[in-house]
Image 1 (cartoon, rainbow, N blue to C red):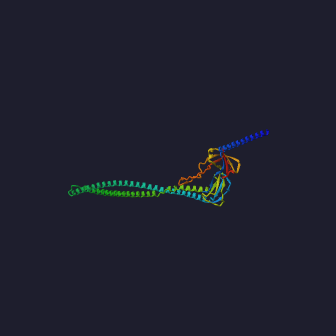
Image 2: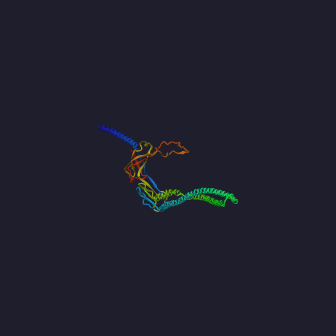
Image 3: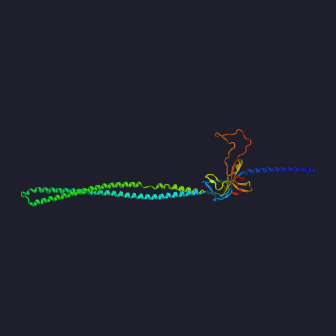
Length: 399
């Protein structure tokens, strides 16, 4: 009886233990499901970093290539050198052309200064010729006045001569009748001779003043001709003056050629733009570099991130800025801290085909439909560049 009682107790205890184990398993399962749903986890993740292809901006033969494939370089380290000699020659030629232009501007300025002096001299000659015209005009006026005075004096002398002649003709017949004396007749003859002399002198003075007037008129005409000639020389001098603006306008073009040649020379030495790893390097010194043709790739070691693909049902518990634990498959014992930087908003749908611009929906239905995965970008806060490689498998857990 006692054995039956003990057996019954054992069975009951076993049942309770079994029930407890089942309950514990169910609770553990529920807790695990809650933790997985509350803190999404995925091993569908890969390590990524920004990278750039290093391509030369000038062409030429590689004369220095100090970096090696998969080597680490720091910002400012020399990556490669292209033969700089052609670009040094081009810079020297551009500088020589620039200096030549400046010398041409100086010479042209001197030439223009001499031409301006000729213009000033021609302007002075025009002024002198105009002054000569004014002087000749004044001489004409004086000569005309002298002619007028000479004509008046001649008319007066002619009148006195006529008077003296008439007086002689009146008294000379009276001498025979002794109405006048011989002395009176002599005085009348003398008066006629004096009047004749004065008349001849006035005629000579009139001819002289007329000649002076004619000479003044000729001088005026000559001064006018000289003024016209001086004005023509001034116009010619003005039109022969060169302009230096055309040469000055070439300065920006020559300066830009110098800057371009200097920039090309600087581009023959390529430096690392940031701390990085060298990869995909398959060239050696002596290779011919061409602009735009990549020589190798630089992986930016400053920032590392993980692209983790989460099911769309887990995205509700993932937010930008959420902390994330990151494990790299190659070093699972290292836990790296990160945070959600962005969440993808689009992937290419499997059944999202289009025909003629309209959606092409499959007629059949899939009874088992897998949830889509969206990329979540996780930035690593404390990366160890020596442990990270692009494409490495990672595990992420959102906290």
